[in-house]
Structure formats: C-alpha cells, structure tokens
Amino acid sequence: MNRIISLLIIMISLTTFNAFAEKVEFKVLAPAQVSVGERFRLSYQINADVENFTPPKLNGFRILSGPNRGQNSSIQIVNGKVSQNITVTYSYILVAQQKGEFTIDMAIAKVNGKNHKTGVKKIRVMGTDTGPNNQAPPSDKKDNSTSQNDQIKASDVYIKAFVSKKNPFLGEKIVVTYRIYTKVPISNLSVDKLSSFGGFWSVDLLNDNQKLNQRQELINGEEYIVADLKKAALYPQKTGELIIEPLQLSCVAQVQTSRKRTTTNDPAFDSFFNDPFFSNSYRNIEKNLKSDALKINVKNLPAEGKPQNFKGAVGHFTLGSNIDNKEVDAHDAISLKYTISGEGNIDLLPDLEIDFPVDFEVYDPKITTKTRKKGNGISGYKTYEYTIIPRSAGDYNIATVGFSYFDPKQKKYKQIASDAYTIKVNKSSQTQQNITYSGNSKEDIRYLGKDIHHIALLPFTLEPLEHFFFGSNLFFFLLILPILLVFFIAIIWKREKKKRGNVSLMKNKNATKIAKKKLKKARELLKSHSENEFYNEQGQALWGYVSDKFSIPLAELSLDTVQVKLHDKQVDDQVIKEFIDTLNNCEFARFAPGDRETNMEKVYHQGIQIISKIEDELK
Image (tube, rainbow, N blue to C red; front, side, top):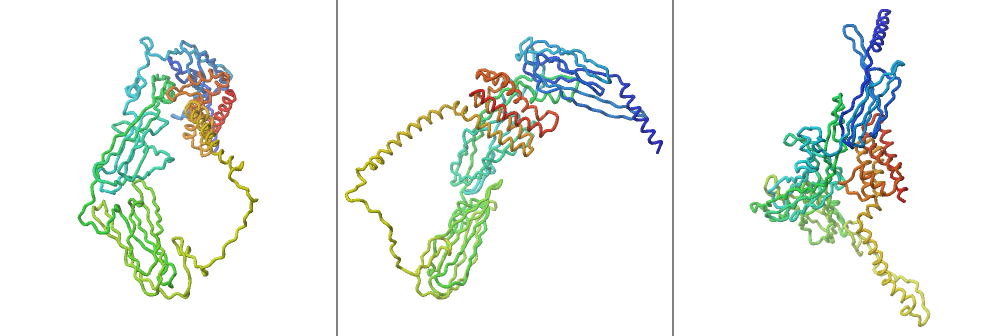
C-alpha cells in the first residue's frame, strides 16, 4: 500500500514538473485579409494555465462576441514518463467596419507571476468590390455554383407535383402531392395560386396549421431539404382527360454574394467559421416557383358485371345493421340503423333502398357521416337511422338491404347485404290516443291526451283615443334613421378602405402587434426548450418588426439599411446600437458558451426591451 502511495506522489510530481518545465508559447491566430462587413475569428492560444489575460485594443473592428475562454488539458504516460498538455484559448468574433490596414497590438497573459506577450497582428481589410486589384480569394466550384451575380439557379429550389395514379377509374381515389426541394435557406413561403381540381371532388389531407415535415434526400449526388406543401385526395367525377392546374408560390431565398474564406492555423475552427451562416455577404432574393400541370385520363367503369342496384360507389366497403327492438306494441317506435364503412368517398355514398311493410309509418332517415384523413386517402362510415312505427298488430319482415360498389384494386363489382329482421307487433293497450312526431328518434314522439287546448289570454295595453303612431315624432325619426345610418356607414367604410389601401401604413400600424405575437410564440418555445425553433421565431419577430415598421422590402433587409432607417427616424444612437446588438445576439447566442437556457432567456428579454425602446423613440 505504501508503495502505491509513493508511486502516485512521484507521478504527480513528474506531471507538475513537466507542465512547468515546458516552454510557454503564446500566439495569436487571425486571417491576414478580410472584407468590409465580414465576420472572422481572432484567437489567442497559450500552452499554460493563465492567471490573468489582458486583451489588446481592437480599433477598426466591432466585437460581436468575446473574449470567450476555452481550455483543453490531457495527461500522457509513455514509457513511465508522465506529461501534461494544457491549451488555453481566448477567442473573439469580430466584424471589419472600414477599408484599410489595421494593426492589433500584443496581448498579455500572466503565467506563474510572469507576463508573456504575443506579437502584433496586421489585418488588411478589403472593400466589398472585387476589381482587378482586389480579387476575392478562390473558392471551390460548389460554392460558385450556389450563387453567381446574386442569382439563384432553378435547380437550387423548386416544387414538383406527384400523382399516385394517372389512369384511374371514374370515382377512384388518387392522391396528389406538392413537394418543395431546396439547397438554400428559404423563408416567407406564400401561395400565389392554388391548384384547381376541375372535375374532381377533393379532400385536403394536410391541415393548414400543420408543421411542414422536413427531411433530407440525395438527388443526383446532391443533398436537398424536402417538405410536402400540399396533399389532397381527388375523386374524379367525369371521364376523359382532366387537367390539374399548377401550384404557384413565392418565397425568399438567401444566397451568398461573395464568400471569403477565413484562414487560421486551426482547421477545426476554419471549417466551422467558414460556414455561410457566419458570412455577412448575403442577399435575399424573391423566388417565384411553379409546379407542372398534371394530365389525368379517367376511365369509365366497365359495363360487364354491373349490378342493377349499383349507384356509383367506388372503393372498399362493408355494410352492417342494428335494430333496437324486434317485439313491440302497435304505435311504438322502433329505431333501425344501417352503417356503410370503409375506404372511399364516404360523403358521396348514395342512399339505401329499403322495402318496409305498408303498415309501417317511416320517417326520413337521420344520416350521420364520419370521416378520418389518412396519408393515402380518407376512410370512415355513413349511418342511416330510420324511425319506424307499426300501426297494426302482426308479424312483419324487413328484407335484407343490398349495396354494390366497384373495387378498383380487383377491377370488379362487389355486392354486400345486411341482415333481415322479423318484427312481432302486439296490440296496443291504449285504444284512443293521438300521436305527433318531430324528430328522428322515438324519444321525440309526443302523446297528447287532449285535442283541445285553452286559448292563452295575453295582457294588452290600451292607447288613448285618436292617438296614432303614424305621423308622430317617433315615426319620422325612425323613418330618417336608416338614411343617416347609411351615410355614416358609407363615410366610415370609405375611410377604412383608404386606410387599408395604404399597405405601408397598415404594416407600420400592425408591426408591433405582429412582433408581440411572434415573441409570445418564442416564449412558448423557450419554455419547451426548443432551441432552434426559438431562435428562428425570435429572429423573425425582430426582422419582421423592422421590415413592417419602416417599409423595408425583405430583399433589402440588412444591418446597414436598418441602421440608416433608424437614423432617419431620429432614434437615439445608443438605442440603435442596442438594436443591432440584439439582432447579432439572436444569430450567435445559439453558439455562445454557457447555459443554453440562460442564453435563450437573455435573448428573449433583449428583444422585448429593444422593441419597447424603439416604440418610445418613435412617439
């Protein structure tokens, strides 16, 4: 036991000795050249535990984040030799603000009471243009194909229509799906023209408020984000060639206009911060998308084997029946139900033909339809509830009820039938009675024991002799009142129409209201710990508020245009700075170190406070 303790003490001593005996290296990492408005990373690395870090002044650059401290340590034992490696990193995320050459002074790190310094770092900031003397760094072909001259290729984002079957039978279900494919970030999807389904009975299979189910697909060696925009079950109502018109929609696509690669000595950080998310050179482009028209050739149902009672039902069905009582007294009500269930167009099922005995009083059926949407169509049932009243005693038969349909899978007609019923009717114990009926169930039948009712005497108010309402002041007032109301409504309607015609005014008026709704939704996502959805909703609230409040088109939204608009509205510079910082924090908080829930809470409250401050400044 003593030998083990001694060995541990020796190992710890060797570790400490090797850690301090190693030469301290303190270096700065940053790209040598960036563009105006480009985000890049500045980091300081040292191979020792730091007691105090003194950063340099970063003149000419705006700090988005930092200094952020990170530390990695490891212990190695090789051939009995123990060594410890420590790497401490202080990193900044900066934005170049103006063109020129800038020098970043040395940083100081204190290790074991001794100060260690880095060298100075020179960074050249180029303009956003790429003339002969200012060439952009080369990028791979894949990046160049994504965006050239602020344009977007047709293969980068498009919609496509699919149909489950192009040659259905009359009344047979087909499913049409509209699907979007994109390789670039898109937002603000808006349907400009819905597909028309002339000649079809249509049922939407996706709810309007249903969240799009996104997935990834590999097409021709390229990865796309795919989502179903619309899905409908169609039932053709006539034969021949039917055309399904295209679906048209618009969206805003974000493309990179000029991407410069950041080069450091750390490949891991290079790949991370060269991601398009960290580039400020983006442009929003409005894209109009249109699917292809679909041609459907509808075949008529075959004449061979068609039953006489066939009325156009197509699908797969079953028929059931139920009766509540098979032995009753005369004048008692009986409830008889028939239910057709299965897959097909339940809403268009025909009425049943039932042969009731002549001594039965039969009321119109109460029809109940229940359907359920599925991914490949609809299913459900349709119930026919009859209320029948036998008037004479005796034994009566209700024959089976037949129902026929066409099965498109087996391409033939099928016939099904319900059960038959024998009803025994006894003589009624009440010889004299009057019966009235108002409804579809026997509970609605009322028995009246008397055929004469007393006349209800109502109190009347007497008026003085020769007192007439016609010609009175109240008469003329009520006569003129509708005319006054028409004029008043016309004036209000004209003002409201003029106000609603001013799109910019309406957006400005509703900007705060819409932003509060999105912030409320962001709050719910915050409570449910949905990080990505929260930041997306928070960002849309802030950018949407600016776009609506200052009438800035989505394609022109940027930090610079926001800053100019706020200056034009004479908003305080400090409030402008806070708003810009809030927008940046919303973009980078998800990548910031620390507790994610705390970061989300901080970004949420910043958004509420800055919108309130801007509203106060604009009053």
